Amino acid sequence: MRIVVTTPTGNVGSRVVRLLLQAGGTPVLLLRHPGRLDPDVRDRCELVVADQRDGDAVVRATRGADALYWVDPPTGEDDPVAASARLGAVAARAVTENRIPRTVFQSSVGAEKRTGVGMIDGLARVETQLDATGATVLHLRCGYFATNLLGNLAELRQGTLTTTMPLDRPLPWVDPRDVGDVAAARLLSTAWSGRQVQAVHGPEDLTPLQVAEVVSASTGRRVTAVRVSDEDLRAQLRSAGMTDAQVEGFVGMSSGVRDDFVPEDPRTVLTTTPTTLASWVHQHLRPLLHEGRVE
Image 1 (cartoon, rainbow, N blue to C red):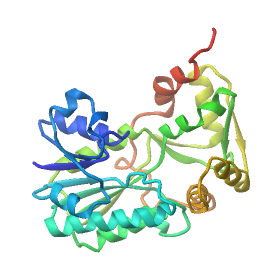
Image 2: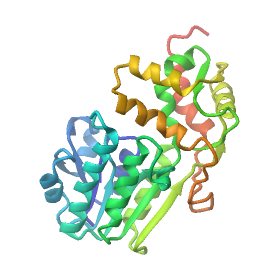
Image 3: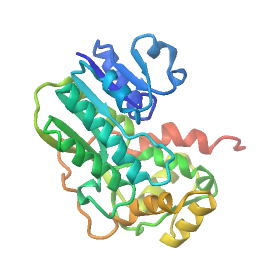
C-alpha cells in the first residue's frame, strides 16, 4: 500500500509515520527538510523533497498513491486563508489527476461554519475543494491541540493562562498523537468510501478554568486562567510582527466558536480519543515549566 504523508515531522504527521512503519509499510514522506527526520525513520521511508505549494511536484509525489494524508503547513504568507486555498487547489489537483482512492485531510472543529472562524476558514475552503473532486475523502475535524500550550510557556511560568474565551466555555482538548492514531487507522483501512467527516474531540471538553486547574495539578505550579479581550490579543500579535490578515486569522479562530457553536460531529465513541490533558501536561509541559527551577 503506497501511502503519502505530508508534514511528516509535525506533531500529528510524525505519529502517522511511526504507526505506518509499525504496520509494516514504507510510507512516502513529502517534505522540505529531510534533515529534521529521525535517521531511523528516514532510512525506512521513501522521501520526496518538495514544497506542497508546487503543484507539479505534489502530483509527481502522489502518483500511484493508495492513500494521501494532507495537512496544510504554515507558509508565513500575509493572508493565511488564501494560502490554505492555494494549497487546497494543489491537493485537489493531485487527487483528481492521480485518482487517489482515499484522502484524509487534517481539518479543524469550526470548519463546518465555512466562514467567520479566522484561519479555519482556509481549512473549510480545502474541505470544499476536496469535496468537489468527487473522490473518497475524510475530513478530520480536530479539537484544540494540547501542544498549543507550548506557545504560552513564558506566561505559564509566570502563573497565568490567558484566553479570549469565556472562562466557563468548554472546548474539546486533544493530544495530537491521538489525531495521528485516527488518521493512520483510516489511511490503512479500505472499508470506507465517499465524503466523510470525523471529529477528534479528545477525552473531554474543558473550560479555561479547568485547563488551568489541570496544569496546576500536573505541574505543581499554580496557574490562573485570565480572560483578555480580542483587542488585547490583537495588540499583542501586532507587536510580535504579524500582518493584519494574520492577526485576524488568529483572533477569529477563537471568536468564531465562542458563542453558541456546537460541532457538527458530536462526541461519540468514534470522536472520543483517550489521552487526557493531565497526562499530556505531565509528560510534555511539566519538564519545560520546571527548567531552571530550584526546588
